[in-house]
Amino acid sequence: MNIQIEVVKTTSENPDFILLIKTFDAYLWDRYPELKKDYWGNNLIEFNENVFIVYLDKKAVACGCFKKYDKESVELKRMFVSPDARGLGLAQLVIKELETEAKKQGFKTLILETLYKQIEAINLYQKVGFEIVDNYEPYIGLSNSVCMSKSII
Image 1: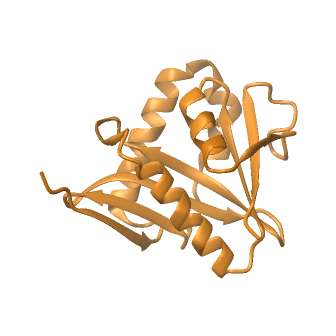
Image 2: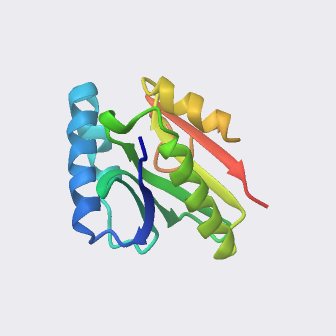
């Protein structure tokens, strides 16, 4: 069986990205209904030109983006792989693309936040070189958050 994988750099206005994010949000709120009030504002995506989408046989199945956090760091956001496409290494592919683009733009560090129940995500991030760090703004004091960092220099 020959699977066709394509990675596309786009913007947050891409309809496939918007659809993947709606699916992601539904998944998160189903898994963490008690956290919606604390986290909803952190999940809004303003216009972003650093979005990557993975297409599997021309169907959008994974995405991620980053936004500038400070002069040396970018924060990975909206990392998601559709349940039917998990286990194929697509999340690692998205992270690699985001890291390459961040380096190209002169950034030195990737940071991210995930939730404590996302054990698979935490394990994946550690596998590709992220380390758990103290929570950064706006996650300071939010005990459900797990913040991570990776040097890319």
